[in-house]
Image (cartoon, rainbow, N blue to C red; front, top):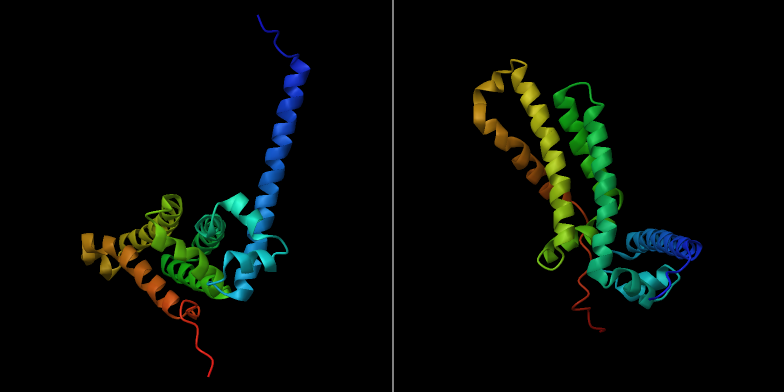
Length: 204
């Protein structure tokens, strides 16, 4: 019958595992921050090799931590979307009226997207790969659901206050989703588009 290892040995092993996991998490965050700075400067079409070089490390390190470019987009997207959601919801909560809240949320969304259009384009590009990266698609859906939910509450408060718009009834429930879609389309349409690297111009 095998002799079980001493309890002290198990505790030591668990401690090393926890420290290694903490180190990996910290390193992962550092790599995401470095990649975000690189994309902000280089553009949304930056390759993994370019991102790694600008971050002062090798491409293999990024592949080891994120798997591929889609994995990096997903990881960076989770952080960017969480930051955008916090700022947008905070803007809505601190407004003096439902109407002011809607205006503040729209303004916060556009401001966040315009602060670094390259980063915004880089992370939302993962949406096009939703079939292969479902977790990012879920993050994006959760983000827009949270914003839509707050807009719905603001609209309902506005209608319940006796506004003449109350006669809209059930139709008013579609407004937040439609409005958010229009804001997103207008905001993204105004962002500079990354250059097409698939067909570089030929030298004359």
